[in-house]
Amino acid sequence: MKADGSDTRPFLLLQLRPEAEAADDEYAAFLSKGGLRPEEVHRIRLDEAPIPDGLDLDDYSGVIVGGGPGCVSDPPEQKSPVEARIEAAVLGLMPEITARDFPFLGCCYGIGVLGHHLGGDVGKERYGEPVGATLCERTVEGAADPLLAGLPDRFNAFVGHKEALQSLPDGAVHLLSSGPCPFQMIRHGQNVYATQFHPEADSDGFELRIRIYRNKGYFPPADADRLIAHCRKSDVYVPERILGAFVRRYRRS
Image (cartoon, rainbow, N blue to C red; front, top):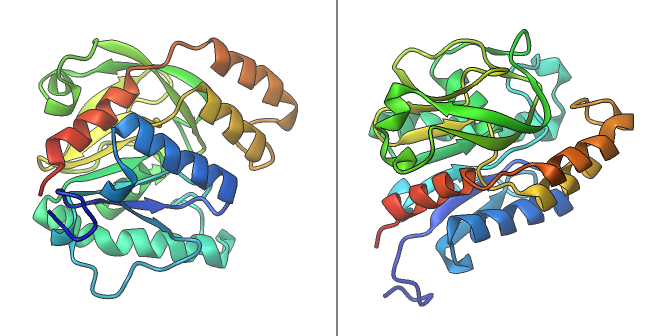
């Protein structure tokens, strides 16, 4: 048992949201939906603190990257200093993660990070989705993936994004698709995953995000109340099982 009383290596949670209320709610959701105790998570809000020098992935069970309002496809001159610093910090870990096939789960922004690192086409030309629930469907490869084992072939997930993968990056496996956005979940190697949807999200969390990000270009601000009502009526419960499966599969002492 470690000095902090835990018997497992923590997961490294990198958060990209500069809005404290949204970041705190996302952190609580990752704990709750992932079945994680606070001592099992090393949380870093990258808007507030850098990744420590000398960080050793071997100290962790895996890496989880949350969502955020930034877009990797935006031109550098359009990114604020905070957005540029956050993006550079996450991308700086990706060469080691993919080279080692180290357990990784990137959520929403994270699929853009992984796709960009793999040399894929990430952009806003096609496949952006308005805030709400989208119907995801397992591919043949998805049905055989251990994180999706036992899930229904089709289920709803919460989304809201301006950019998306425009094509499947070389070397990636396509696991989940949807009508509006074909690349909802991918895998690189055996252990590096990314989702376009938010596996930690529920209707309460999405209501909060709608209120916080109503002026960030995801939807016309006047649509906020309608979108909140839509999220409240949506039956979204399967995606959290993917997050839980990731934690259970990679949790290690």
